[in-house]
Amino acid sequence: WFSKKSFKFCRFTLKQEEENRRNAKMLYEKMRQHLRRKDQYSKEVEVKQHLELTFQAVEVIVKTERNNLNQCEQTKDLLHKKHMLQEEIAMLRLEIDALKNQHREKEENYFEDIEILKVKNDDLQKAIKLNEESLTKTISHYTGQLNALTAENTMLNSKLENEKESKQRLETEVKSYRSRLATALHDHDQGQTSKSDLELAFQRARDEWLCLWDKMKYDVPNLKDNNEMLSQQLSTVESVFNKLKIKLHRMRDDLREKTLMLERVQRDLSQSECQKQEIEHMYQNEQGKVNTYLGKQECLEERLSQLQSENMLLRQQLGNAQNRAKSKEKTVISIQDQFQQIVRKLQAKYEKQGLMLEKRNKELIKEWNYLKERMYSYENEKAEGEVTIQKEK
Image 1 (spheres, rainbow, N blue to C red):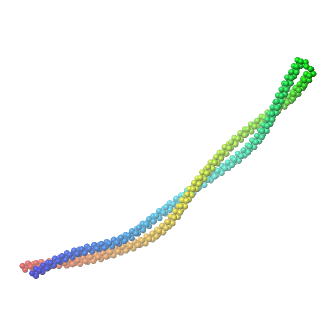
Image 2 (image 1 turned 120 degrees about the vertical axis):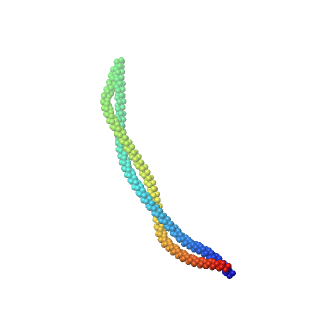
Image 3 (image 1 turned 30 degrees about the vertical axis):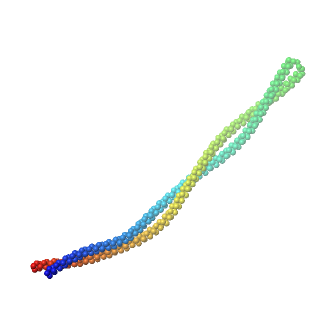
C-alpha cells in the first residue's frame, strides 16, 4: 500500500513537476518574448526619439541652409540684375552721347547753312538796294531829261504850230490880197474909177503883199530850219527815250530776276528757319528723351545704390549665415557624435542585455536539464516501482 501510495505520490509529483516545467517553460517564453518586446520597444522608442531629435536638428539645419542658399541665389540674381542694369545704363549713355553728337553735328551744319544763306541774303539785299538806288537815280535823271526834252518838244511843237498858223494866215492874207488885187484889176478893167485911188490902193496892196512875201520868204526858211532842228532834236530825244526805255526794261528784268532770286533765297531762308525750328523741336524731343533717360539713369543709380546696400547687407547676412552654418555644422557633427555615442551605448546596453538574456537562457536551460533529469529519474523510479509492484503481485 505504501509503495502504491508512494507511486501515486510520485506520479502526482511527476505530473506536477511536468506542469511546473511547462508553466516554467511558458513563463520563460512569455518572459523572454515580453523582455524581447519590451527591450525592442524601448530600444525602438529611444532610437526613434533620438532619430526624431536628430532629424529635427538636421531638418532645421537643412531649412537654414536652404534659406541661406535661397539668399545666395537672391544675391546672385541681384548681382545679375545689377550687372544687367549697369550694361543697360552704359548702353543708354552711349546712345545719349551718340544722339548728342548727331544733334550737335546737325545743329552745326544747319547753323552754317543758315549763316551762309543769311550772308547771301544780306549781299542780295545790298545788291538789290544798290541797284534800286542806281535805277532810281538813273530813272530820275533820265526822267528829268525826258521831261525837259518833252517840254522843249512841246514848246517847239507849239512854236511850229504857231509858225504853221502864221504861214497859213500869211497864205490866207496873200490869197486875200491876190483876190483883192484880182478884184481890183477886174474892177479897173470894168469900171473907170479914179485912177489915183486905184493906184494908191494897188500900190498899198502891192506894198503889203511884197512885205508879206518878203516876210514869208524870210520866215519860211527859218521855220524849215527850226522844224528840221526840232525834228532832229525830237528824233534824238525819241532815240534817247527808246534807249532809256530799253534800259529801263532791262533794269526791270534784272530787278525781277534779283527779286525772284531774293524770293528764292527768302524761301530757302524760311525753309532753313522751318528746318531750324524742326531741329529745335527734335532737339527738344531728344532733350526730353535725354531727360527721361537721365531720370531713368538716376532711378537706376538709386536702385543700384539700393541694390549695392542690399548686396552688402546680403553679404553680411551670407557671412553670418555661413558662420551660423559652420556653427550648425559643428553642432551637427557634435549631434552626430552624440548620436553615435548613444548608438554605441545602446549597442553596448543591448549587447549586455543579450549577454544577460543568454546567461538567463543558459540558467533556464540548465534548470530545464535539471528538471529533465529529475523527470527521467522519476520515470525510472516509476518503472522500477511498477516492476516491483508486478513482482509483489
